[in-house]
Image (cartoon, rainbow, N blue to C red):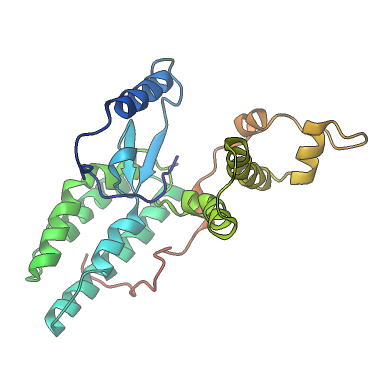
Length: 251
């Protein structure tokens, strides 16, 4: 499970948190955790604090983007930034290769490479501080070495919610809560049907009991019967959202 973009982790909201909201969120998580639902689920996020629950992993695209967005003022700083980005891009590609065919030896090699990349000192103070921050998140960035079936980035979940956001921006709000629920639910149903290879019109026809329509089982049953995909296999590019640097040696 991956989580969409949000605020930086550990950022505290202005003022005291709403006790009712905290209690509600705790009750919701307890209702999921206590019966044993989603025990093996890993939540992949962009380091937003609200998603730091259960087993948690971090999105590599957002991690690299922090390096990409650093402001540089000298040729030395730009060179250091490009060099580190190249090492991260290469490391990311090798993580994807590991997920396709994981081995214990390769896992240990990648852990050692992570240390060589992120524990180095470049002389660019802001970049060095960022590398220290990313090093502190090593366990979550390398969660994929223990769970190679999870996604390396949150691109999938962000793409899934984009249609709801676009519709809300174009169409504006709704006049009733029921209208809002329908507006948010139907795009999600449509995307789920598309991922399962089902025509949305056939799904609606089956739910509405249209005569002569296709018989479509409940979506939860189809999801449970579907083999677990490797999300990163469908995205062989780095997926940075900007042009990644070329590979560099020396990692």
